[in-house]
Amino acid sequence: MRLDKYLKVSRIIKRRSVANEVCDSGRVTLNGRPAKASAKLKEGDVVGINFGRRHLELRVLQLLETVRADAAKEMYELLVDEKIAEEEDAELWDPPPQY
Image 1 (cartoon, rainbow, N blue to C red):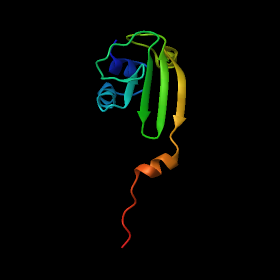
Image 2 (cartoon, rainbow, N blue to C red):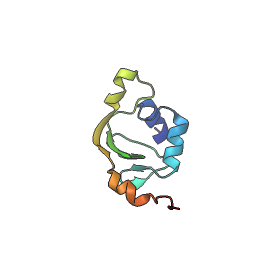
Image 3 (cartoon, rainbow, N blue to C red):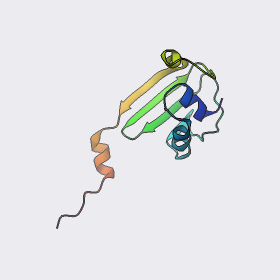
Image 4 (cartoon, helix red, strand yellow):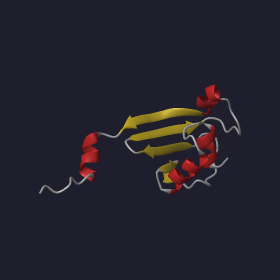
């Protein structure tokens, strides 16, 4: 199964077009390497996703074409769910000049 379709079916990302954009922007890794939306997944793979101030890592448990909303969480095991500290964000942000 393609990575973008898996992210949509498992309801990690709501729309496949958004999943495609996130993958192609370099914010998704597959087994520690940057992954494109077309990457093929298999059971046991580890997927990492950066959502702005949130980082997720999950292990693929099942590859299903369709699944009910209440059973979608059974498709993966959440390994890491962490928020990026605001101090790290402050280093990346340049304040506007004071006049």
